[in-house]
Length: 371
Image (tube, rainbow, N blue to C red; front, side, top):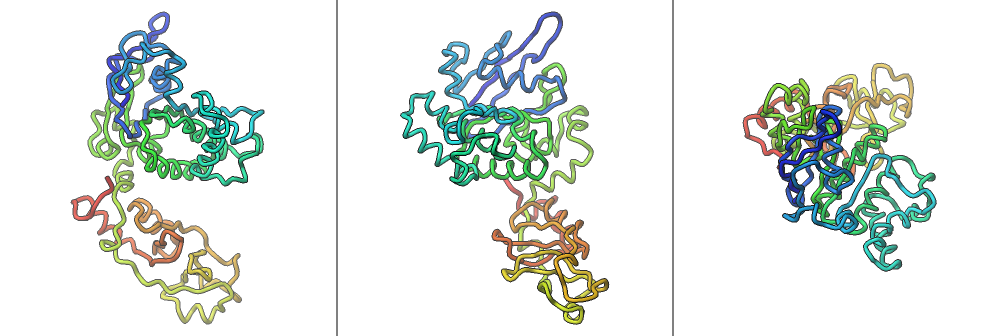
């Protein structure tokens, strides 16, 4: 665990970046720091590996004060991931990843084997191994940055807005990949983000800081949404707290009935579609029964083609949150949310009334929620 014991950071004059911060980042969990600009998030993070020296107080790693450790040894205990990855431009991907293992004394051949293994674990194929950073997208560079931090197998990791420099689609993919990875590796992590949705999605524990570096609240995402400590925390989280809570209510197949949705394939004629349609909308699937989009029977003039499909509806994967299921319903032109299996195959559809019943059941504790 990482412990802050009345830690403060003062600069010249009257500037207080962090003021008597006391909290614990639990072992094997992800703790996320959020708060307005200038609240001391990054300063707090950098005091852990002594890139910034505290003015007073102590930071301890598993009970050992960091101020008594050799700085080089301390930093080798901690994986560090920053915005824009910070890769060495003159080194290949595997050489970049192997760097931290080599710094800890791992033989070169073994470090490169570790690097190749980590490349796969962060979702990149071996084809990327000998590329250079300039040949990668921003999201791919961030994956390499995470792999490099993990190469020395640190007990602790610090992540400073690691996903903020990529577009929203890639950001969501990186978040999902990181959650999967953290379930496997169980590192003790502190992350800084300015995005409250990211904090609620990723964090086991969320730390909200006020301007001036004082602690406002430490809580799980569920507790933070359900019981903000005061008006400042409530305002920072935002007005749609009730909607965000749905991100923690799990879609249960037994609690939300799935309808058997009629489907068609590309090439179907308007006459065929009218025969199977229950209203003006027909769900179109590929040969593997994976949804492609919705066809509007009333507007179709000839055999169904790709360009005829309405692609506005999102898909909810079985076992995902009620927030995703509700979004699938609300975004669907037919008003029926499409539920797919883990491989993308159609499982059925749900209606708004059934989702509303599931939301009420989750709210009153009659459906399970995610831990």
